[in-house]
Amino acid sequence: MTTGDKTHWRLFFAVELPRDLKARVGEHLKRLRESFPHVRASWEKPEKIHITLKFIGEVEASRVEELARAAERAAATVEPFELTINAPGAFPPHGPPRVLWLGVEDPSARLSKLQRALEDEASRAGFPREQRPFKPHLTLARIRAPQGARELAAAHRETPFGPQSFDVSELVLMRSELGPGGSRYDAVSCSPLSGGAT
Image (cartoon, rainbow, N blue to C red):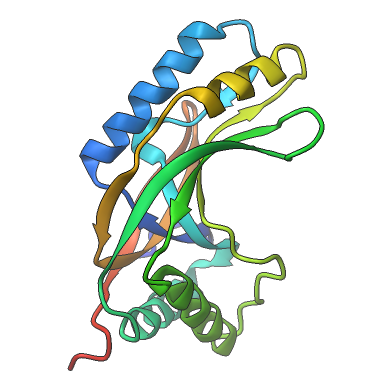
C-alpha cells in the first residue's frame, strides 16, 4: 500500500455492493430524477453507493496502515454473510425530508458484529468511537431545498425496490478524494471475512 504525497487522507470503512445491484439502484435513481427534475438535490452516483460501517475523516497518511491492520483484525472475527437491500425511506421521519435512502436488512446480525469489531479495533489503534448508533443504509440523495421534497420522498417510498440480496465477503478501507467532478472513492485495502479461520 502506498500513501502518495498527500499528508492527510479522508477515509471510511465500507461494504461494497455488487455491480448488478448498483445498476438496479441507478435505475431507481434515474426514475426519480426524471420525475422530479425541479427538486434541488445532490444525487449519489450509482458506482459510489456503498454501506458505510465507520467514517474516519482526515487522517495522517502515516496512520493509514494502522487502519488497514485494524480492518484485517475485525474482518477475521466474522464469517461471510448475506445482506438484503429493501424498504425505501427518508430522513428525518418528521418534517421536510433531507436524505433519501434504502434500508439494509442484516438477518444474520453479522454486519452489526463486524461493525462492533471494527469500532473496537479502531479504538485500540487510537481512533475515536462513533457515538451515534449504527443504522446501516444506502444514501441515495441529499435534498438541498424544501420545494417538492415531500413529493419526491413520497414517490421514493412508494416505488418498490427489492428485496435484493447479496453476499458480503470483505471489508473495504476507502479513500475519498475531492476533484473537479466531485469526490472519487478508491479502495485502500480489502480485508476478507474469515470468521476466525487460519
